[in-house]
Length: 158
Image (tube, rainbow, N blue to C red; front, side):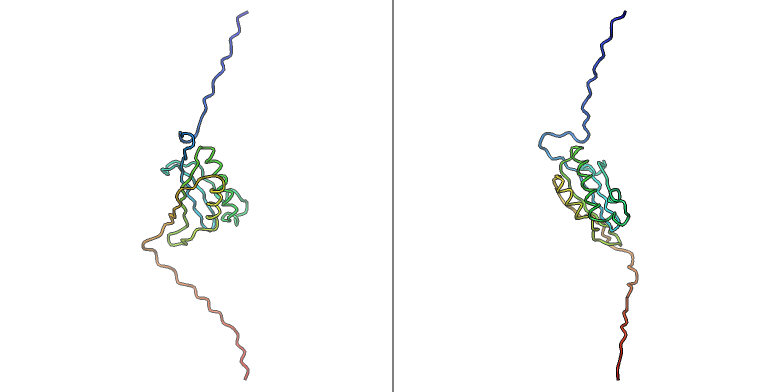
């Protein structure tokens, strides 16, 4: 009978996703928060903006279409993003907040504030907060304003 071959134990290399970092050093990413009145996107990239780390929307977190832009959906999306960022080794985020802009509304939707608050409360350090809403230097002509005239019935007694 031939001698038994010993099984070789393979050493598994520790695979680390994300940047190489020293202990106690902050690693920054960029959180692009796009808050419209229909949905809220929380998209985290590396500091150059080239590589996407995670992207979650409010519509991915709730079932009803009317709740996609709600603060609750934005909070759930931001919590998911923060958890994924921590697992990838990112500890701090610069925030770029964007509304629809252009010839549409320049104010962020209802999910913007709650998404930012959820990122901060989940333990991510916040660096700079910047508004990157596209504002036109010259826009298309605005439509005719709709004027609603309310006529009240007047009863005149003589």
